[in-house]
Length: 267
Image 1 (cartoon, rainbow, N blue to C red):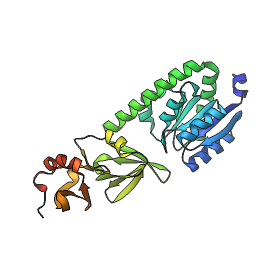
Image 2: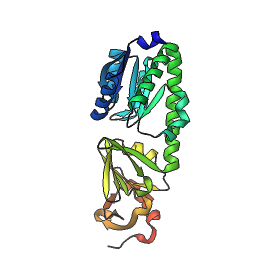
Image 3: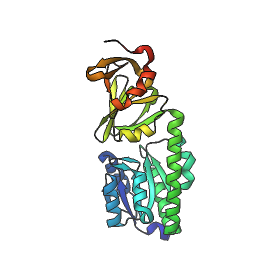
Image 4: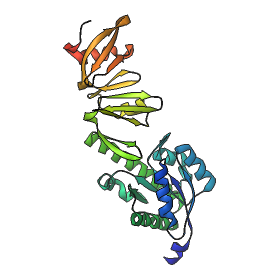
């Protein structure tokens, strides 16, 4: 045990939030036989730095610009080092797949919990072959994705980053989703949040019985459509419960008429 503990452990920190990276660096700096070889803030940078630095382990956030922590692992493939996930999901959501991973650390990060995770990673590196780690990481990614999908389906919630923190948004509070380049603006009761995900990706996670695509850049909750009105050139405008008006794309017009029913407004 003493021999394993004295071997320097090189670690790459991967998190898009500067505050989170600084906290991790501060906590790791207080641990013996730990060397932080670098930090990365997105998927592409993370993959490049793993290839360049070959760290023993990575502390890996799940949601980042340009993809997710899952994408990092898929791109690394056989070259993936030992992984400790850094996530904002609570322990109840993690129990389904704790047994398949090196470890998980939940935000806000506690020093003692991070120290335990680092020691588990150190022991895992000493005990496992590269092939065994790759197999386990593949199982971990699959289990984590399944658990998160199940969690979102059961709770009807979205987890998004807002001002450096994770916010839980109940889908039954959402009025509409609006595409803004590589982001989606989520409009809820009285406010909005900018979420780094494409509208097409988000649509695949929404229940079509609850949400309707009205335009290539807009998805609305069905029961928030309070009426329709005519626009020039036979176009339609959907009137929403929050007072907003969404132009209905021609491709999607056939889907909204049965949905709106008699709520349409005459000119």
